[in-house]
Length: 184
Length: 259
Image (cartoon, rainbow over all chains, first blue to last red; front, side, top):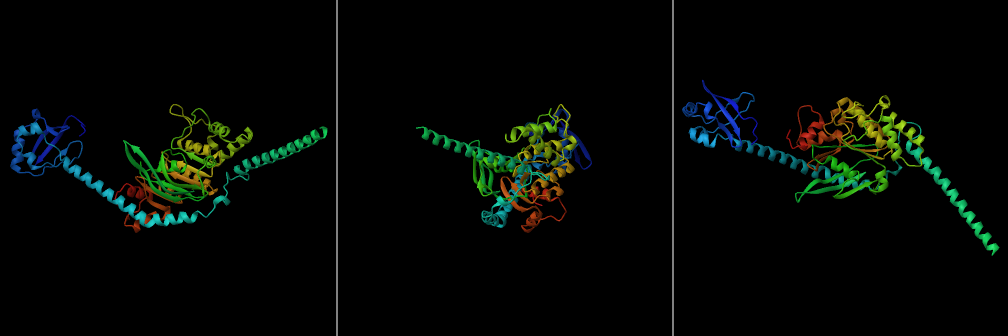
């Protein structure tokens, strides 16, 4: 449990009787501070009312905390040693139920996906394999001269120049060879 | 682009964890595919996998124009990361010219590259801030939306056939997000394939997507047209009587919250 503050003020509302207690939130739970509490009166009052449930309000936060009868009827000495544990079991159960519900929703959605979408999608993917998207062109921008065309034309022009140069070079080599053979 | 049965697993504390679990889909040129899901559902991982940037145990099949991923395909892919990595002291034009000089082929002259940058600036609507500094934590500069557009512009310079965007609207107000998505839509309509992850889009943004993949802890729970998602969930028993943003409803379901 995370310690938020050292001390909390709680107002115990028992019909018309109001008792002020200072509780400390410790790793073990809520502990009563004996120096500021009329613990005897509190114990008597709690037993007299025979409460199985006690809702108390926190001054800063509206926390609804559930205390069990067994805890309330404990003697002060026992309180002092053990403290009043918050109903952590209840909280854990609640979060577990929520987690379980989420898991169930997710599983049902995954099952629905497998049943309704996955099969159809795989068939769609298989049929798409025959379609070639190469004929679909893209525009780089809205202007007349697209950037891809712009770059492409430049590269194309350079390729033609290279091709002509190579051809001329090969022709020159051929004539040189012929010339050398003639000299020999 | 097609991806089929993508599975990605990582080892965490000697235990194998499945990050992506059998994801299949098709995106055609001119379409925008949005990946939706709560934090940690695998959106960015899937995007990285589609961009060929994921290292590790990735199984499945991804093809681009019926061809497997290759170096030439990578050069034609633009990837806009979630964080804008820009030099704060450069202006918008300087940033894009610098990128153009580095990324465009040597066959183009400097002047041609500058002309290309001008086109991208005007295409992304960055004319008003072209001479403003990018800025950073200690230096006032252009707005977040403009920074996002500069990041997109950096990828636009190479004229990608496939544009991958990771959370292009995160941290932006609804109007700026809509403006960014309008820009993306315009780019897609030029024949590009756009894949984007998005976190909590407004309904206006949601209906701009052509297709949606909804992920929940790495598993797909919806794939199909954005416009029919609500109808689908209603048909499988998850409907709501109140009018809600479809993206919110989808995220609730991906989180496992019953409606």
